[in-house]
Image 1 (tube, rainbow, N blue to C red):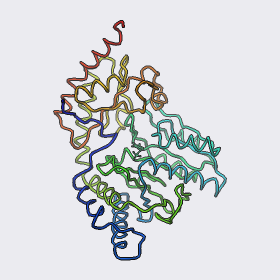
Image 2 (image 1 turned 180 degrees about the vertical axis):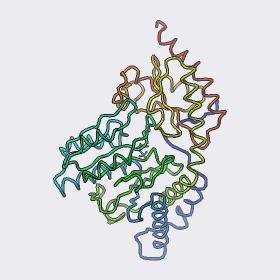
Image 3 (image 1 turned 45 degrees about the vertical axis):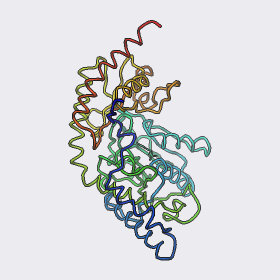
Length: 389
Ligand SMILES: *Cc1c(COP(=O)(O)O)cnc(C)c1O
C-alpha cells in the first residue's frame, strides 16, 4: 500500500495529542452532569465554565456570549434560524441576505427558511474570486433584513472576505451580521470586536480539536430564538446536556491554535505558494480559483480544463494523495459546484476542480512528491478522455 499524504485539512484535521490529554478525564473520572447540584456535577460545571472563559478569551468576548453546540453546522443553523425567527418576531423582518459561496450549512438552511417559512432569501453577487464587496452589501441591505450571513474564509476556494468592512455596513443599517468562521478558525484572527460581527460560528475539528462540537459567538444584545428546545442549557439557546469532554477539547484546541497561529501560517504560506506555483507552471491549462492574495494561508484550489474532478481524486488516492474537489459533488451524479458557478466559471470547467490544503503534519517533501505526480496523472486522464471508447 502506498502511504497516504494527507492534503485535505480543509475537510478535517487530526486531534492534537495535547487536546486528547485535556479531554481524557472528562470521559470517566469527571463525568457528572453540569446541571446537577452535587459535587460531581459542580466539578463538570467548573470545567464547562472554564472552557467557556478560555474560548471567550481567544475571541475577545465575554463568557456569556459563547454558546457550545454539536458542530459547525449547528452553529450556522442556530445563527441563521435564530436570528431570522427573532427578527420576524421582534420587528417583522423577513428578508435574509446570504452569499452564493456559503457552506451548505448556511446555503441549505437559508433555502429551508424560504421554502417552509416564507422568508425572502437574497444572495449577494460575488466577484470572480468569490469575494463580497462592501458596496454590494450596502446596496442590498434593507430595514427589514433580519440577518446577513457572509462566510469568513471560504472552504472551497480559500477566499477571505473583508468582514470588518461588511460589519460596518451592517452596523450602519442596524442589521446583525453572522460570519461562518468554521474554515477560518485555524488560521485567521478571531477577535470579534476587530471583526465587528454579531454572530460567529466555529467547529473544533477544523482546528485540531474533536469532531462533533462547535461554538457560536453571540454578541450581547443580539436577539436569537433557539431551534433546539428543552432545558435551559447554554443560556436557553441550546437545550441538551453539554458534552463536557468535547467542549474542553474545543477550548484547548482553540487556545493552542491561537497561540501557534502565526508560526504555522508562515509555514503554510510557503507550502501553499509552492503548490500554486508548480501546478500553474507544470500543468497545462490549470487555473487558480479564489482570490490570489486574500486567501487562507493553507489553501490552494484549481480548475483543470478537460479533467473530471472525481476521476482525478480517485487517481490521486491510488497514488497516495488525499485531496478534495472542494465541492459536494457525488460520484456518478456530478453537479458542478454552485460556488464555482456563482464565480462565473463555465459548468464543464467547474467539474474539473481540485482543492489541496496543507496542515501541521505537511512537509516540503510531501508537497514535492505531490507536485511531481500531479502533472503525469492529469496528462493520463486527459489522454483517456479524448481516446475513443
Ligand atoms: C466544515 C465547515 C462547516 C461545517 O462544520 P461541521 O463541524 O463539520 O458541521 C461549516 N462551514 C464551513 C465553512 C466549513 O468549512
